[in-house]
Length: 424
Ligand code: ATP
Ligand code: MG
Image (cartoon, rainbow, N blue to C red; front, side):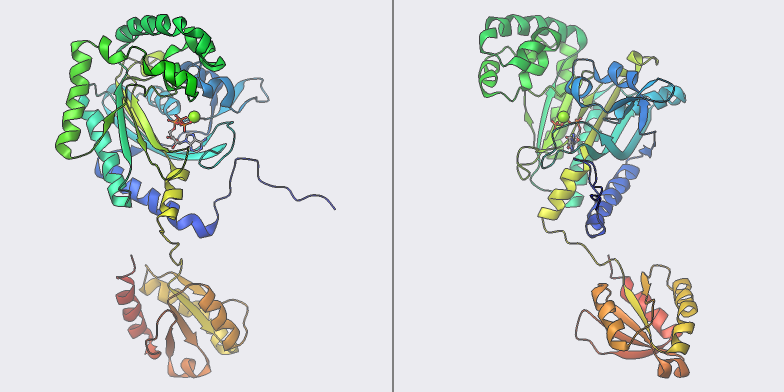
């Protein structure tokens, strides 16, 4: 016998029992984003490989080892998108969106060839936000406050916010030299990866996970010492805004982020409840990227959150899976069975918010009630010979001890409407 085909390692089915959590997260995010005036954009899952090389950077984990790249039938090198910012910038340039400030968001699957583990997958989902054309710290602050609001609405009250500033290019260049000098002096104590990055991407050494390298890094010069007045006050403004809004944060001078395109503000929201993969949302300012990809110089700020990690937290916090139906229509006997579909349609017209599952396939009252109960519905609506002749429905509550009753069509529609206003 042939072996069953299974999903690709690190790529997961999202089963119906978990989908309510996804919907809750997605719906809440969409509401918050639209309340702040952000518009959704959808871009293809596949782009030319160069887009990611030129934006994320050649010497990054993503481009060096995590991309799903392949040749298409024309021999062009294409890649499954590992993140959303590059595509967003590409689309914004291509469609001339950047003649004015743009507040955009996107969601969908991203692909990275990483070692699968809890909270780290090869296909995972992000909700991302990008604001273009706004240079001041007010937009950085707006987006940090937006994320804080989203966590409040979702009931996450223990996330930690870390922020840092990476300075501007010139400042980083001076700092880079100092850092290389310092790290070179300790080269014999650095791990192999860090040693490799020493000259190509020394800032990444700062967030090395290697304990010995971390010890060296602890005494390294910090970028903060090399910042000019403007960068400093940009950062100050954000700190002050967070203080005034009562959003707690800490400044982490080692926070550099894994992508090359960031400057000035970077941040991460971190949870302690997921083990090692604790970052649930991360981003920052990337003023150089639009120009780097061929557009007019356009300041930008953006971030992405990891949907799987957030959904896992919702599940850990006991957000259950709500029932997906309100009522289950039981119909016994030939006449009732043939009347049921049309009556169900009429009910759906009369009570548009009703989620009604109709029984299909006949059977006894007993077997149909069993299915009704299993469906999670709050009510069984019962149609037998008697009800049919009386032009009524039996209404049997399935989740509490309240009395069964019998209602005519109009009364039933009114009853269900009333019950469903308390649903959400
Ligand atoms: P990490 O340090 O966890 O690898 P990253 O810096 O690579 O994260 P970003 O590219 O900034 O992550 O992506 C933003 C968010 O997307 C992360 O904070 C995380 O929540 C989520 N994320 C990133 N990679 C994965 C993955 N392989 N599986 C699941 N979620 C992911
Ligand atoms: Mg990563």
